[in-house]
Length: 290
Image (cartoon, rainbow, N blue to C red; front, top):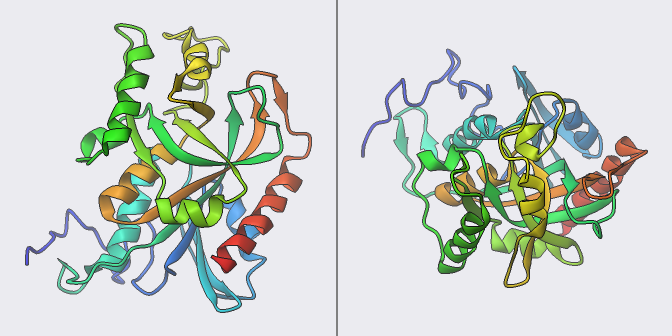
């Protein structure tokens, strides 16, 4: 088997993954990812037991259990550049032998659940609601660096989206879908839709403050997109990268979006911390029963 070099997979002096500071065995097969490091403790406080707490930079990890269900919660920071680091190292922890630097003969598939905040782009999606991403368009470049195997439906969806973008717009979007078994387990009874993953918070999400946006009609394009009854429902900054890398590495992933803002009605949650805590408990209950 091919040996992975020391510069392709960097390990710390203690043998842990370079950025996450974790050893194989430190993570559960169910991993919750959050953007905010402070949210890790907001989730693990509901664990019955906590066996591990580790951190390096913005990557904070708690592993514990609710009943017999072992769960890891890990902060990624903001953006798909961090998702590239986190998901490659999570995969390495379960599918690469750190001693021989070779891929394990039997590959493991993780269940990866993002719990994050988002803004709705349709007027009928209420603030303080929960929405699961069935698929995501990435306006960031991450998956342009990886080979993707798209289904016919994904290719048709991506083509339809590209066709509504202005000629000459500096965008090269990609598409990726949720893990279907995990979406089925967590998505029953929940609002679902297509998410836009942007490489920034302001102009890349159609906001205008002082710097002039290069695509001033971006929000209108996003809101009005419809392909065979499928519409874009929300904006955030990680989901497409999560879905793309999870699929490339053979993992199941689903993104759960707590809607704190509605860009069309221009409303923002008056109690964001309380709403997030409510959906954390809701999703943990679903996870432990899945």
